[in-house]
Length: 125
Image (cartoon, rainbow, N blue to C red):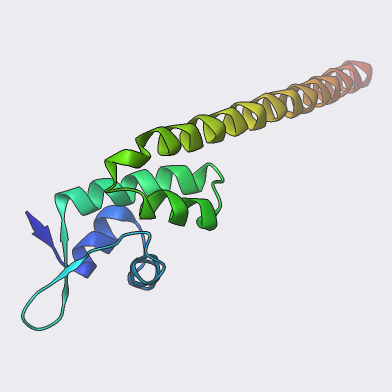
């Protein structure tokens, strides 16, 4: 199935501007065009865009995504691409640990405030 840029934008949540930017930066290479010059996205393109969104949302820099994308169709780079993902996965795990630690501190502070508020209410009675 083929999709227009408008449909692709709606399905991925990426603006048309972002889709054009990603193509210009070679993050989504080889987008086909119809006889009028309009972009035609395939199901495979949508799957790739979804993957790009996932790694972008987890903080992978555009420069690394570009490098990863440029190796996409070269089977000789599978080990390199795998290593890039393993390293990124480790970064995400470290970020998750830090976030969990921060969340625990916030939870503890909220619990402290709740205890204080409950004690204050009891004093008023």
